[in-house]
Length: 371
Image (cartoon, rainbow, N blue to C red; front, side):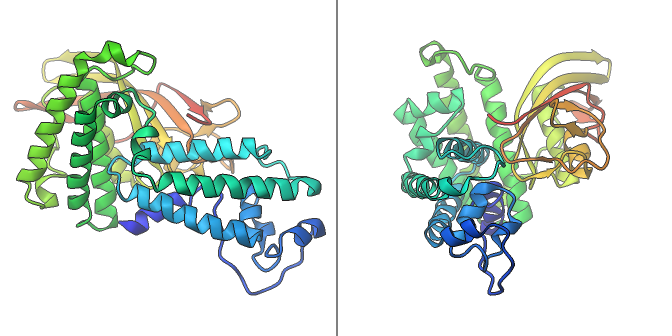
């Protein structure tokens, strides 16, 4: 499980690269003079300016290793890791902007030292912040998270549920742990829909007091379920295969099944699912939803991962779905992909089974470069 966490952490956050003993020709002597490790670490192979500095400077390299560990430790104490990964990707963008790094534009030689000093300061401060468990609540960026952290009893209940769930997931191997994390996040999305907290980003918390009782009931029920599982992951995860009603919850389960088949969990996580329309005729139903996914690890915008996991290729210049074979553009960590798609369901006894076996085709879509 820890290896899975580290695999996510090191994607797209500008951390240190391992040292190499060999020397290589350097096309920029000014960078070599300022960054002693630039040549021996082959830092010219990095295309991202921040990565070059972390690679070529000993102090930044060491600070990056410490930050990497702090991020991994935080992810390993959070069952719902998606928002932590998003928040970290947003921090990297803010860090680069405040330190004067503009996209992949090369850093001028006279600016290398001040940018390096800024990155070191930001990295050291970030490491200290991440080691504070209270930051897990302070960093939430959802309405439900803010409401929970504003109420001590709900915050304690959430912490207890997280601890109990993590106790079960730690018994699983990497792929099984990844699927369990995904299922836990699906519980959370279903909770928010049932408690009236979906799509309430701009609603003041004082207007959501009616949701507090629902959240309390959710935590009580889930803590009881985890306790009843007696530490056995098989009693807790992977037990639901059909849904009682063809709705957004059923689509969420359907997407999870498709993503599991396509092995999407290393690259994408579902953030939100909104129901747009639902039609039912006898034992057949169709549910149209908007699905928002977040990129956890970079992948090519037109690739089997893109088509199998998001249902389409992407033109990143326009942010629209488009077939672009041969394109080398990559969707980076933190990208949000929104698609609209209809899912077919068939009734089986008193439950509904998803008949859609793929993410294709999608009706409309949009790619956004950040939160």
